[in-house]
Length: 126
Image (cartoon, rainbow, N blue to C red; front, top):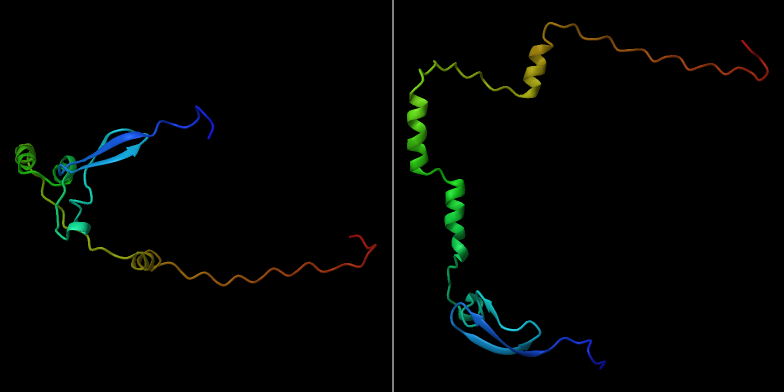
């Protein structure tokens, strides 16, 4: 091996969140992991719910309507006079709308194809 081109390969400790410590060698040094073979459901056969950094709570707060927000929004909407709502128009598909729009129009006549240009013999000019 050539000298001074390879990184140091030193002893390292891998620390799991469950408290398991694995001693190995690495160029990186010591590091921490969330799950290891001692606590992983595949190896233990037990189900373990993981909520890393409150991901479930973040999701719920982002996408769920909270009662506090609904209560704050309700007084603002009630303050102005409520206008009577119009009856909702029945939803129609695209084909029904086209049929209704074209109901009074006459149908276009089929167009005749233009005659092809006749071939003239060489040397003849018009």
